[in-house]
Length: 359
Ligand code: ATP
Image 1 (cartoon, rainbow, N blue to C red):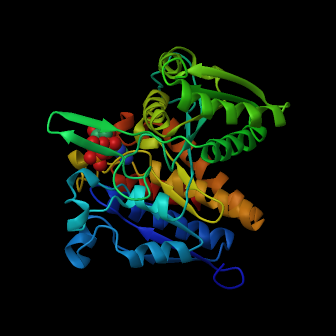
Image 2: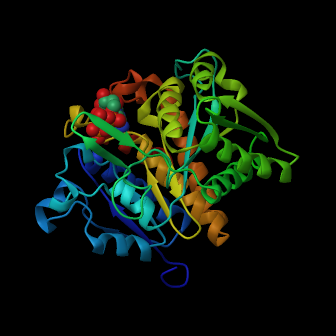
């Protein structure tokens, strides 16, 4: 921590709708800081296209160092598909921060809300624990170079990396989460096709399952998991899976639960935690006051929860619960919903309604 009872929170607004939903998020955090005397100190750093224009890089090294020194940070969505190549200053802030700070656990909850339509056949309240540092991600599975390459103009090869250590630690996170929830873990895999990589992943998850007999454990193929999320998501509690399956399934789960605009996440390691909405920078609605800020606000709430556990501070856990229940009440009422939920409130009007609820 910075000094006694003071915590540094780095704010990285990002691209597209990032600045709009970040301003609501900071307003909410500041309000909770006052109400619960959290001792938060905010510092803003530019990343993405704003940083490229000023510093020549979408993720300046100084920003990585600021995040390393902070107690926690909030990254707004980034539109890295629009960045120039890496050697021209285009770094993916999301992927590079995950690697630089070893944020190996991407925790992505999806829950439906009373009174709000959901699109799966059952309500849901599940969490996806997604491995974040290897897998099928070309930018993070090599020490040097890219995990994708083209031996000829008409042939592309992509390498996927699965290690015992990364599989083991995401499994441990999943079982820890499950113990605080409904005590069930489902490993999602494709071992019938990728016998070695998926086999290694399952070997490690099964070993952790053996050490946690009080948690029910089962396994599901990723393709049937995609169908089961639509058919009967209610039966799942914690899903643990590799990087790309987790990315895809979590977007599906979030949309089925109500909206991608409610989809929160944290990326956590042993020493650092980054709050980050599950969705991208939504350039189609950027700057129009249409985005739902709940995804990023709920991500910041998860960061407060992580900080509360790390520093043994009950007030942070209370602040997290206050945000979650205020948002549940707002989305239950058609008059206080944003457009993505069929309502009429803009980004800032929703933020104002939320702040009013938070007192
Ligand atoms: P990117 O290029 O950054 O990945 P994208 O538009 O391809 O952006 P998302 O940003 O994930 O992908 O958006 C997918 C769809 O969901 C878009 O139609 C977008 O407008 C919508 N969307 C995403 N986030 C929100 C939000 N917070 N509120 C409302 N709609 C959202």
